[in-house]
Each structure stands twice: as C-alpha cells, then as structure tokens.
Image 1 (cartoon, rainbow, N blue to C red):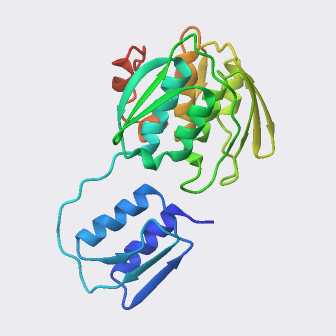
Image 2: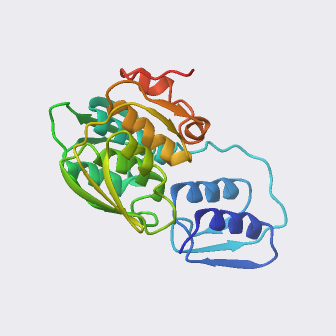
Length: 258
C-alpha cells in the first residue's frame, strides 16, 4: 500500500542522495505534492509528484527560499461534515476542492447541498432536511481518506437508514465507536466494518478522546447531541483542528474550554 509519510521521507532522503531515485507506488496526497513543490523551490529535482511514480535526481545542496503551506483538506472536510451533521449554512475557504472528491460525492449522495465556488466550498443542510445513509470504503488518495472516516461515522449517525463503513487502510481505526454508542448511536462492529443505523438521538456525556480523528468525530457528535458533552484529553483534537473552539463558535456552535 502507498504510504504518505514513507513517500515524504524518501523524497527528502533522495533529494540529496547521489544519482537518480525512483519511488514506485508513491502516495499522491496533497501534502505529499506540497512537500515536493517546496523541495523543488529550494533546488531539488523532483518529477511526477502526485502520480504513482516519482523520480528524484539528486543534487549536491539546497538553497533557501519561501513556501506557503497549503491549507489542510482534512480540516476542511471535518468542518464540512460538522455542518452536514448538525445542520447549518457555512462557507468554507479551504484547499482546492479537487483534494476532497470522494467526500463531496458522499455528501451529495446523502442529500447535503454542496456548492463549489472556485477553491471554496459552500455546505448547507437545514435542520428539517433529512440525510440518507450512504456506504463508505476508505482508500488511498484520491479515494476517501481514512483520516475522515471517524468523522463520517459520526455524520452517518444522523442519516436515515443503515450505512456500511469499511476501513481497509488501517487496523484499530474504530476507537471512536464506543463513545458514540455511549452517546446513543446504534453501531455494530464487524471486524473492519461498522454498521451505523440512524438517525440516532444523541445525548451529551463525558467522553475520553482516544486519538486525533476520533476527537473530531466526538466533537461532531457533541454538536448534534442534547445537553453538554465534555471531552477529556482534548489535546488530540487540537492536533487536527487547532482553532476548533473559535471557528465553529462563529456560526453558532457552543464550544468552550474548561
């Protein structure tokens, strides 16, 4: 399987290595491409980033430069699903929408209004607008990102019907399910597949965030739940959404730190 961190490490190592390096079955994620753009801007010779085969011609040294890091498409996807789950009308100034092809498709299939405006995204779901359950299988880019699977599971707790969510990239990526069930979700785990039945009436409670993406999923569930939800070990959430208190609060979410 392609590996984004592995591809990034090989890019950096090959940049200053002697001779020509060919990376076969390379990861194609946007942040991998952005690293290649940065390295090329510093004098590297990298060709094919964003494809399955990347060629690096080693150079003797790099020079200084400036690079603007791209926006986080995973953060943008998290906010899009939060709006879809809780209801609302939000304009996201995010990374190019081409970075999120499968998520946008799934949202539209579920009945969420999604309008593309250049590199920006307009997501609308009115409270009385029902969502349909839509199946999902994670896969490497440009497939549905595994790093958005937990958030999608939380979203599907509010959809009508049963959705089958299969995680084929990583093991133990359903750590959020236990707390979602604790909040009232109806989810059945079968090996690397979760069956989510909805819509569920969620109720706020105390939860412990197990990892970065599970934390985002629990925040989405908390926005949909009745009453207060307290997330312990919330520093996990900050790793993926550093402004999670300020940004959703502006459109009307009630989030605060204790």
